[in-house]
Image (cartoon, one colour):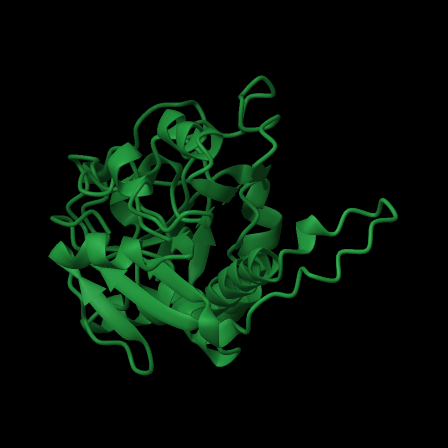
Length: 306
């Protein structure tokens, strides 16, 4: 099968060997006649001249496999009629779970309260994890991985998704129960995608529904959060801290107020990364499924945007 590597050239040296090792029957190319390709491997930033990719020219392509978990930069392309599959990478899910668990534990244990200033703070004893309510917004592959890891070390975890679909071992809420979920979230973790329904979801009204002193960890998409409303909630003392890994503008400008706010920790979109060793086999499986006419893995629902 002929496959176009429709991704920025900077990643070729890393991705090409991994993809070809996972799918040796594939001829992976960086250019050629669009009508000659059976599939596309896609990542945002392509074409690199800033133009919009015209998928209508790929008349033979049976699948577009994204290398990213998020597909918001491609799903609205009106020329895209081929099946689109997002990347669900086991390494990506594990990395996200480790990031969220690390920061949740830091908030839970109150690690930042122990300034190394010679003061003995023997009264700062944290509760057990079983006494701490954590809510995960967005219970896709990564959300389930995060919730499972947190639950495994004792946290009282509730998951929320639009569907409210059951997840084994996790208390689930859905749809109209968002207010109920927020009201119990001493630690709120947002892993929601960027869709019309989720944009600006965490506004002033919803942030104020969180328990006083709550911690927000946003590792999903920056568009979910109204930035000015977060700063206001922190300044008012209602929220205790925010750990932010994703932003409306990336890289986050050096002058942005998040950098200097004493109650905000900025990380540079490092919560989770697609790893070639675990992602390439996922792409290979979908290429084979497409060629065999079999159901595709992680097919994007265009009406939902993910």
